Amino acid sequence: MDEQEFFSKNVTLSTEFNKYLVEHPEFVEQIPEEAVVVLLPEDDPELCQENLRLVDQNRKIDDVPNRPVVHVRIERLAPPPPSRLVNPTVEMIR
Image (tube, rainbow, N blue to C red):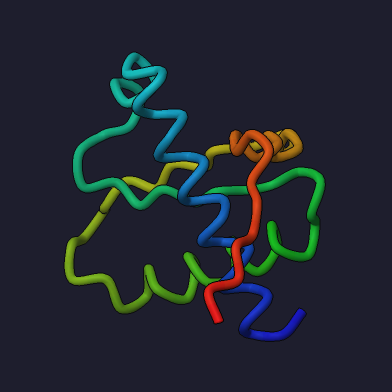
């Protein structure tokens, strides 16, 4: 997996995780303040391993001793919903 793919997958996971937190505020209560949250997609072992490696690497240079680390295991992402556009048309102006 190249750097761009790694970044793209984590942006998608982070976005979906934030949506989940908005819809399930009780989930936030399980995460300590200032915790490092590591998203671990179980259906993508390579990304999972890379995220674990990255958090281990960053903990070595963290300026907050004993900062909690929370692993959030994600079974998979559901398919994205279809577009909500209804019968769009293209109108050529020139």
